[in-house]
Length: 312
Length: 224
Image (cartoon, rainbow over all chains, first blue to last red; front, side, top):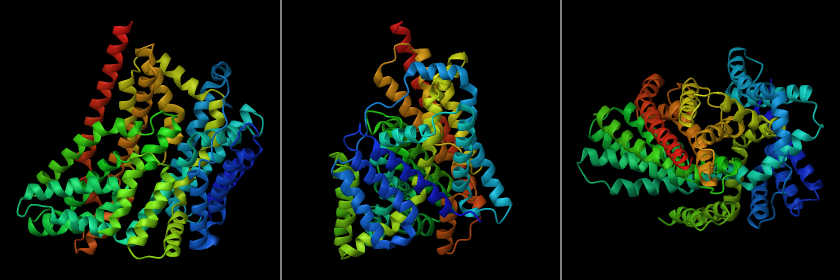
């Protein structure tokens, strides 16, 4: 049976090849830092389960030391000239689109297939495993027709990854910080503070505190899932449901969505907000957040009104 | 109260634009120490969580495919398609993507699209081409804004679609926690309550896309 472990092995191999090609790239003055950084990411992917918790922690410290002291960077250039791209686009156009759509199509088919046919792959991880298959199939189809130099996909992929840089592991780092926060009981302290700040007896005040609290605490944690249990325990359950008799399903469902509005506004949700800015090579790392605030704020207000209207 | 020092470090670090990896590590160490943990325990806790969340970084395996396709002109082709479609305005394009992203997420297909898989190779270049058709002399700032909106539209679509799906993680999380308080609530009941917000998100973000479209268009017409 195919498990997530196989997908990690594939990812680790790709990161290891990125590290190796990075090491050989003499045009990049920071090639040693790059090779060490992606080499460590590859080690984590392949051998993380055997390193032990403390070993993994040391690996993270090494990653932070390399990136934090500015030892990684991208080599200038490397992209295919625009004229060549335009010429090739005219020749291969729709084929390229087809290959690009193989990844989502395989992810889609695989997700259903692995759930319906037991024993092929771990059904809980069907989507990620299917994504890995989609990548391999798309690569095979693309290589067969385009016949590029064999290393081209890896070289171009490495160029894109170097453009993203250390931001590539930011989501994982923030998720880990969340775990340390949980261990230290940060959630209970914040929940207690918000709980004491609510005016007694006012229904709308309590709804407002719950919605705003979900959004703000999500912004701090970068994740609505981390904020939800804390805010439900501090405000949702004792005030909205128990004291004012609100419908717990509405309080929970729409409260979570109020948290998602917070996700749109925080750099802590790096995979949604900072990584795409790096991937699209925006000058402003907060450009995506800037584009989202105008949607998130009115939507948060709508969610708060919805809880007030529908739960009581 | 002392454990909140980690939050202060994060906020200050991001505002002062220190390297975020350093800021996160400093915050984790400070928070752990404030809670009375020893350094080895903090490092181990961080390492365990880092290892448990590796699935977040699997997405980068798409880069060799995207790199290959871009080298053969995929972004250019995406722009050409928009150039040929007369009705493909910036607003319609992104609103259409928003709708599709919400609809797919609502049936549980969140990973079929995303920043690496669809936004960078397809949606962003298409949006740029549509904006260029509306305003040939697009400035760098406007180009940035259009690309940022392409990414923002992906986020809004997936966030406010996925909760309609019964088996999505947050629905299961909510159900589990409510059960802990003694409330037995069907997942369907929770997911139905995500629909009003999904509609509101589509209307609000759609309205903002329309305004972006108008803004680029009027600047374009005035400049021409």
